[in-house]
Structures are given as C-alpha cells and as structure tokens.
Image 1: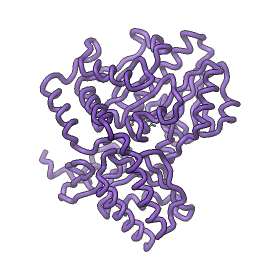
Image 2 (image 1 turned 135 degrees about the vertical axis):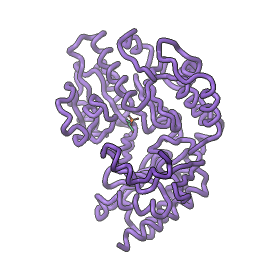
Image 3 (image 1 turned 30 degrees about the vertical axis):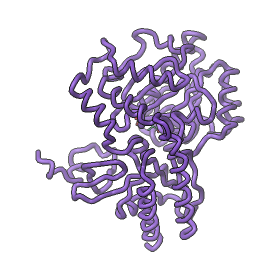
Length: 404
Ligand SMILES: *Cc1c(COP(=O)(O)O)cnc(C)c1O
C-alpha cells in the first residue's frame, strides 16, 4: 500500500471506532511544530497528551533511538540490559524511590502499583486488607483494574463485572477520605493534579492529610504521576513540588518523550512484595525505550530546563488573561507548570471540543479535559514565539466560535 492512499476516510474503514481522530493526518514534527499530509503547519500545544515533553524529533532523543536501534532492540526479562539499569539508577537517584519496575504505558504502571499494594498488604497483614480507595473524576488507565479504580463510571459501563474492593471519595476532600479509610485499606491512589478529570490540582493540605491518614492505617500511598511527572510541573515529579512523598509512584507519558514506556517506582519497604514470579512484562524495560527515556531525563535535568517551565507557564497565563479580557469566556485558568486547564464559563459548558476543532482550523493543536475544560500540555521547551503564535491562533478560533 502506498502512503498517499492513507486518508482519514480509511480510518473509518479499517480501525475499531473507539477513537474519533481529527480531520488531518500529521506526517512530520520538529520542536513544537507539526506538518500534515498537505504540508500545512501547526503549532502543538497538545504535546501528544503530555507526552512530547521535549517536542518532536529532539536531536538528543533521535540520537539515543538511532544509536540503540543499531545495537539491540529487545531481549525480554530473562536478561537485563544496560539502558534499563542506567535508567533505573537515574530514577532512583532523582526521586524517593529505591526500586523500579518497567512496563509500557500508564495503565500498566498503575496496574503494577495496585497489584504491588494488594500483594504488600496480603503478605504483611493478610487478605482482609485489600481495599483500594480512589477519587471521583480520577483517571488511571483503561485496563479492567484501572478503569475500576478510576473515578469515572462511563469508562466501566458495559465491562462489568469489574474487580471489587474499590471505593471512590471526592477529590480534595479529606473528611470524605477519613470516613472511608480503615485498617482494611491496602492503598489510596491519588493524582497530584487530576488531568483527564479537568486539570484540578490537589491542595497542599489535602496531599499532606492523605499521607497522614495512610500512615495511621498502614495503607500505602500511590501517586499516579503518569500525566504530572517528568517535568510537567517544573519539578521532575509533582510530589517534589508538594513535598509529600508516596510509597509508590506511577510514571509514563512524558517518560519516553514519545517512545512507549512506563515505570512503577517504589521504596525498599514495599518492593520485596513483588517477589520473583509475581508480576512481569515481556517488553517492560526494553533497551530501545530505556535508552530514549534516559536521554529524556538527561535533557530535562540539564541546568535551567525545568527552571524555565514556570516562566513559560506565566507567559501562557498572561496571554490567556489578555484573551479573556476580550471575550470573557474563561471561568478559571488552573494547573501547575505546563499542565494548563482553562475552564469555560457556564454558557460554554459542554462546548470545549468546538474550540479545539476551531483552533485546529487556525493551525493550533490543543486538548480538552472533559466537556468544559480546554487543556494545554505542550513541550516544556516550547519557544516563547510559538506560545505567542499559538495563543494568537486560539484568539482567532474563539472569535469564530463566538460569532457562529
Ligand atoms: C494517561 C494517563 C493514564 C493512562 O496512561 P496510558 O499510557 O494511556 O495507559 C493513567 N493515569 C493518568 C493520570 C493519565 O493521565
């Protein structure tokens, strides 16, 4: 098949209809710019949903991928490999974690985290202690366990029976958690910022209180940092910004900068519960993914890179405030660092997608987070000129939507 025959219509013919991709087909990216099949250029505020943390085709990542690609792609876990060991060492040096488990996605990282938490409770306290508490509106992935733990009923519908022993409490509500947690609780899982649920940051007091309640009940605290991790908030992980340390942390999305990789990070106190043979992944920790991820971490931890995130976030906020002066359609701009959520005013609730489509027409890629919130998760090194140009496109898109 010739690539020129790969049109958007073909998607509807040959792909399962679980996605509704945009009208264009991107074929090339560089930095925060993307080009489609017709050569039209776009500015990328979506970042592949918080994945392309260093933009597209970053030279250091291309180098890591091509160099490793000439050497060794895959072994499976019957052998370890140099890139996996180097990446695990780096992640343990840069975080609270003592041990790392590699997998291929965010859902798998959470699956590992939740299985570890259950198994840790089982090994140390017995099978009664198996309950998992999550938060309403949370998102933890699409496997059966992670949709069950996630706090959005629509993702479970039609897939029942789902795993049991899971409850959900309102986010940022410590009293609700206090009422639910008990000595039967194996773990509490929280996103430091609810991403898919609408870009809602946890309050400082909430995360501190969750940590304390977990300690009081010998429950493990899992932070799902699949979206907030790897520099997004201006810190390598958001927990470092809050100064509240989990027992287990899941990471994916930006971890590979576009190459699929996930990781579950944990302490020495809990790691032994995933003893030999209890869990695994054929691809997890493969040399290609780990080489690229190592390059991502090395680039992000170069002096000044993460420090520049908050200035870029301020530039976005100032630009958005100026746009809102004109149109008064933003109820709130929230988030941390370069995970930015823009809640529309009530009048525009349910219409977030209309703005995303209009922006694409103008040449800007962005995201929604639910029906009422626009979301930006751009490259952390997006040039200021691209921020300004993209916001001008958003301005034009808003003018058109309002005029309709
Ligand atoms: C995207 C996301 C996931 C799922 O990651 P996948 O790689 O799609 O499996 C889990 N948790 C959070 C917070 C996410 O944003």
